[in-house]
Length: 93
Image 1 (tube, helix red, strand yellow):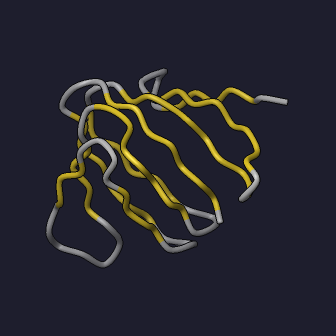
Image 2 (cartoon, helix red, strand yellow):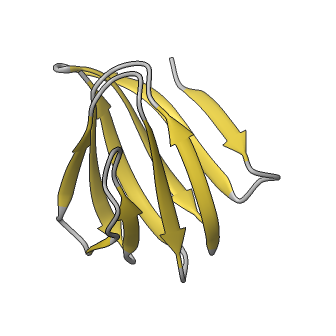
C-alpha cells in the first residue's frame, strides 16, 4: 500500500511505494533549502524542475535537470536548493 510523507512544514511531500527493485518515493519540493540524511543508498532522479545539490563530502553545488540522476551513499547527508517547484523519484537500494 502507499504511504504519504510530509516534511519541512509541508514544503516536501512524497508517496512511498515498492518497485520491482525495492522501496521508492515520488515526491515534490517547494522552493527552499533542505538537508536530508540517508539510511540506504539513494538514487534520485529529477522528474521536473531543477535541483541544485551539494553531495556529501563535496564543496561545490551541481545543478540537476529533468532525467538527471545522482546517487547519495548510505548514512550521509546532502543539501538541496530548490528555486521553483520540483518533482523527483528516489529509489532506496
